[in-house]
Amino acid sequence: MTETASSTRPQLYGADYSVYVRIARMTLLEKGVAHDLVPVDIFAEDGIPDHHLARHPFGKIPAFAHGDFRLFETGAITRYVDEAFDGPALQPADVKLRARMNQIMSIADGYVYPQMVWGLYVECIEKPKRGEVADEARVEKARGIARISLNALAGLLAEHRWMCGDTVTLADLHLAPMVGYALEVPEVRGMFSEHRNLGDWWQRVTALESFLQTRPTS
Ligand SMILES: N[C@@H](CCC(=O)N[C@@H](CS)C(=O)NCC(=O)O)C(=O)O
Image (tube, rainbow, N blue to C red; front, side, top):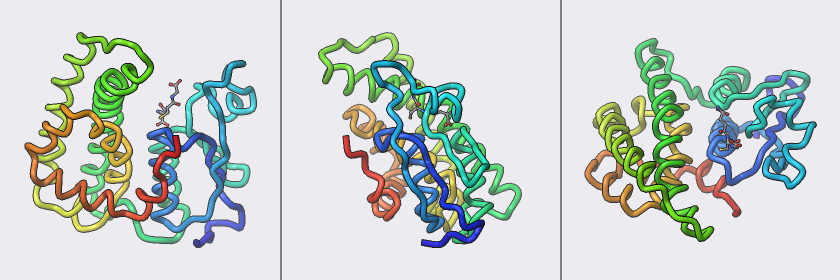
């Protein structure tokens, strides 16, 4: 693991079940940056700890620190990690491809996470596990947006190996943990299987060391 941006070891605050924490961890691992995952329980009985709110006023995870430089919002963290440290470039140099990468990260945040993780995975898998009933209206809305999301992503991926071409970028890392949860839903697996190229891409993602090493423990 390298650590060349400064001698300070980056700290990532969060929990390994979190989609967004996993995106940041995958990015750090892809860059080869030695770091610590500092556990934070945002669902603690007494509420979000004050020390975490000081780092992240919205009380979400992850938060990040590199020396006295503090950051929250995963897209900002992953872009910083890519630019501040040595290691393989995770953002395309080409302006249009970089715009494509940013577009895919926005699709992930704006549609895939709220609809495919919350609207489908949480409603159809997590809620029944807790003995709760899925909100069918919520699922119906999510189903429609999931289809649009997968069509859009399959179109953008086209015949590339990775979302933005021949090498892994932040777009792949941003999508991977979200798709991982979404594919636990049988209906999403059905939709996904309609796109051969997404299936091939997923095989590559699931073979990444950074994906394997960040599997949630709970
Ligand atoms: N926009 C934030 C989203 C972070 C986020 O939603 N994290 C989730 C975990 S994956 C969280 O903290 N959820 C707790 C909550 O919403 O109360 C980012 O990009 O980092």
